[in-house]
Image 1 (cartoon, rainbow, N blue to C red):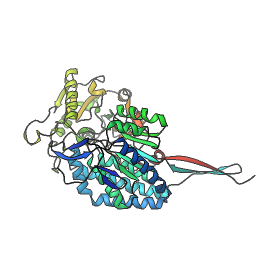
Image 2: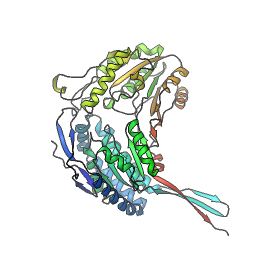
Image 3: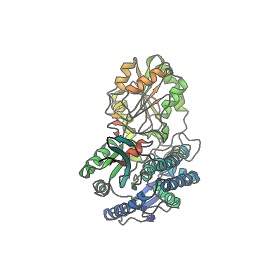
Image 4: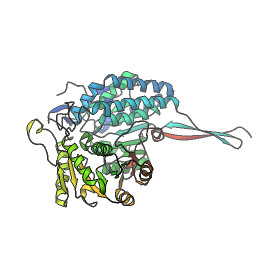
Length: 481
């Protein structure tokens, strides 16, 4: 087990849950136990809400400059602890150590740094009206319940916490039960940076307790990263008090590669869109549409590149593909691979679980490429959330746009072409919250991020996050009788 103090973080202190129910964190690459955490009861959770509500009022009274200084110090401390946090994230989530320092920890630090500036420079509108003027303010919502996901635990916690705090809210963060370790580390760093106790809290609780919190009258907003089904439940429970809601949910995103594409860019974008973090990314471009004149050439290149990726110990800096998050999730992905075969699709690379050697105790799957995929197959319609790519030929621009949009999800999309006019045109036509042209899966914190259709509501990051964590108030001032 890790020599790490963790648990629940309430009112600035690490505390044990008051139930006998244990959350056991497992290293997905080895099957070994990392730590045990006692879950908090509904009573303890409700007490945390009381604390967060009381402390939020004083936090909101601080100037944006004062809040910004604390957030900036948090960014500095995250960077100082970069290597340690990255290793913890790799152990807890199975992600390669070649990814976590930059994609997880640096992204979190960037987020706190960005919103430290937002806190200090937030401006209101001034609107002339007959006989006077009006102005608007961005008022904090109050207590935010943030529900994290297991694929980017520290990053997601930061993406929700930094804007919430910058805008004057307090926050209760509920980490995924599969990756609970780094949330309390964020709490410790925030405390060291000077955040008043009780403004940021971490609760490890059962699902039924989360459901109760979503309906709690003293929680003003719920921010969720999770599945579509979880999003529906959160929205339903939050409806009783008409809470503000931000939801970043699932995806089945298209990556469209035109015949005029730079082939190196096309192959690397497809690799990044399918096999980064073992394919456990909601934005992944798992439907790779390739224009027919370059289809065979692309297949040869993507097959060779994929088979040169190193599957191995996530702590090895040379590893490209780490472990899936759990045995249950691995079996789900393997089941989708079987479904694809049964439906008539053909595997040209990978497709197997690794059951021998040093990796047999973990949850490792070879990165898998399917061809002969029809649009109505389950592997082309449902989110797999694993290293499974479908490569599908197309003939015309209008055809591929229609096929790419033929899903109830709309989180992300990608277009690879040397013709930027075409890139802009196709990106505009695609039904997605974010669309990359000649790249994929790049999400700097100063751009808004979120989905269309059943992929979610609202936006994270960028100035759009301010709108998500504040309520606009209009003040009308009459200066003439």
